[in-house]
Length: 316
Length: 289
Image 1 (cartoon, helix red, strand yellow):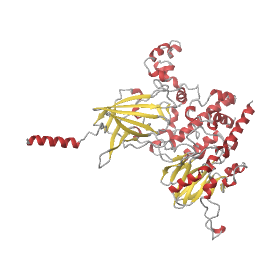
Image 2 (cartoon, helix red, strand yellow):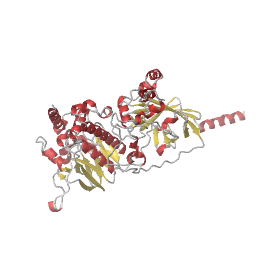
Image 3 (cartoon, helix red, strand yellow):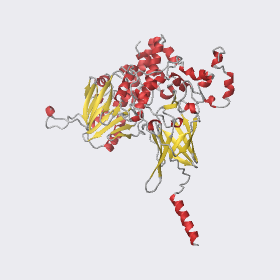
Image 4 (cartoon, chains in turn orange, red):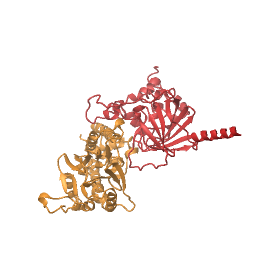
């Protein structure tokens, strides 16, 4: 009974996390909105994960690309912000609502080339560089239905990767086993902005993608890592700004509330698990009932999915 | 005849010099809280386990019961400011206006609260509230309009806050309607909180302030420090059913626990009859006073 429930749950998670399933919706009425975060940083909101755009003299850097069907609208919005070349795409993880537009956005830009590649070339001819953790590539490559054109063209496998672009250091930091096994958060050191991908969202409970290595503890570790990077203004309001994977622009107050919810739910479920309660008993005890009115969503964001994944990924 | 002209001219000059724009009232100045009103809930702060008179739902009650006062010892919680809808539960305020320098049209009314020197802006120029994906703050985004001589304020984009500073949460989905009403040197500030997440009915709070010509708002430094060494990521809280602190208010005042735990029905006078039917803590403890 328990094994069947777990197998069904994992099968559902794999199905729902697929880029192809996530793309099945109508985009005709979707408008791309741009929210200015700092002088050279914007948050684009449409359908799918939030997009971060950094602009400057060297070009445009984009974090995540939503869906392919929205690429024309996204590119049009980016062109309202800057006419400089699109140079970098960074993917926070491999889900379709964050990488679906990779091919189109990549092809609208270019990667600078020179030196050993060829002195006569100014571009490597591969479009913009798509940068992500190695596990993003491995997760995309494991799905034969995903086009290779969506794959990252530059990966890192260590705990972080740094680039310097548009006059500021950009640190890309791996968050192992949070939303997935390939999560990156991106810290713009001069602009004082962090983009989190789905390791932090403001809309619903976290989607713990167990089929890709996600865990509740990984989410908590990621939220602590984000908080460590934040320096708030006086009064804990403002300061470092945080662009979540979904939902609204945030600062430390929102992130510590999120971490508080995750940590308290973890402690409750762990306590129940330590007392020998089965998953069915834990679900029946409703350990998240005080948070459900705020955080429960549908499908992969439902209370049942969250509690089940939390229970299954907590160590005994 | 000449005297009549002179008087009419002076009258015109005076009326032009201090015009009365529609129904606008001038709230500018320092206002001192009337602390005899709801005193225990204000400067001393509420007791642990006192949720009485709050229209909270079961979910918010569990959040409050899970809350540990040790939480505010964590550095990232120490300097969290009182949200704008809670400010009237604490100390003195200063109000001033921002006007367009040529036309003198009212652009905004600013309110500074003593605690943490928070400053909020009430926009009076008709601007729209931002989209939902914009940042939420402790002060929220406020717009105002005149309703008769009352200033009516609508606030959205609030971060999660508190209804009482003993763990009773107000969610980030709440919207707040306020009325500022001036009667000469008295100010009544009414706060109406609608929270679809944690309230069964709107929560209404009234506070009175007295105009002061002798007071100023002091500064309020706050630097978070590590007060005790704890495991990284440690969050103090009570597991469900383990919080004995929540009994303090009920036992200290010998009030039936159900009443202390709040709920919409505890706001109304009829609830006094219900209270009479419930056992008091002293009775449950064997009749000991």
